[in-house]
Amino acid sequence: MNRKTECSDSVIDDFAEKLKVCGHPVRLKLLCLIEKEKACVTELWQCLDQSQPVVSQHLAVLKNKGIVTSTVQGNKRIYSIDDPFVKEMIHSIGRV
Image (cartoon, rainbow, N blue to C red):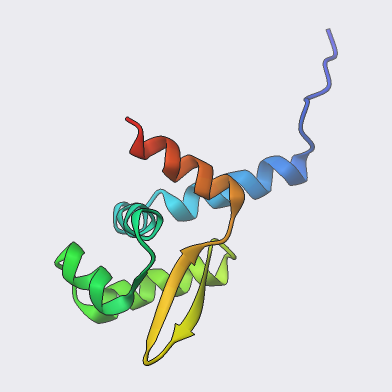
């Protein structure tokens, strides 16, 4: 039987890439913290007990993939989840 998939290869590839990027434990923790309360880098690395460079590198990956965005508020860069799929996924994790 020849069945067509419901999703195109490009859609599958896009979601697979998002899951791969978000699947790193530090990035997943970052996303959970960001979803709970928009936060700056200092607050994030202190909550995760990670160094600032490590957190900044993970945030850069998330930002480069379009998963998070940042805005400047005063002297702080505040991060928020921009991707609706990832936002819903993190929201679902918070309900578990």
